[in-house]
Image (tube, rainbow, N blue to C red; front, side):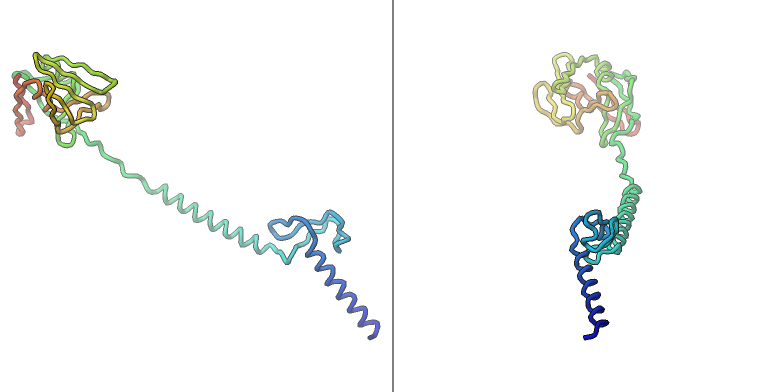
Length: 211
């Protein structure tokens, strides 16, 4: 073997050894698959401060990662934009102001707060109707109970409940008493528990109470 071939062979082997050494060089790699040598660089066939890749690492994976990240961010942004554009349906209140006219013993009741209709049933302000009936009422906030009395009759109601008591006997209301905008409303039918007779004229939206 001539000297030229021997030299070429030695150089090739040396390059292969250096390459494998660099691949085996210890240390944490960055997102690009490489890092900078700061320790015993010549031992690994590198120069001090030389940046190099490990195991064939390159920036392609980082590029793919960035593309994936951008794609994911774009999808997230579109999803967020779509969700913002969808507005929840606004629920309409179940109660509406009523033009019901109430007469007690032929005298019209002048309501401070107008009666309401709730699910098709008439509700009247508690204070106004009891004053018109010349009845008294008591409210017990701890239980939400309302007691209305006139002469020997007593009606017991509970906020949010359709169950009522007329002189201690259980009855079921069409709609429960409730507080709306700070005003307590009760179903007008509850006045029957006070011994009242009621007649409703739908053509004039008029309720006549005799007691």
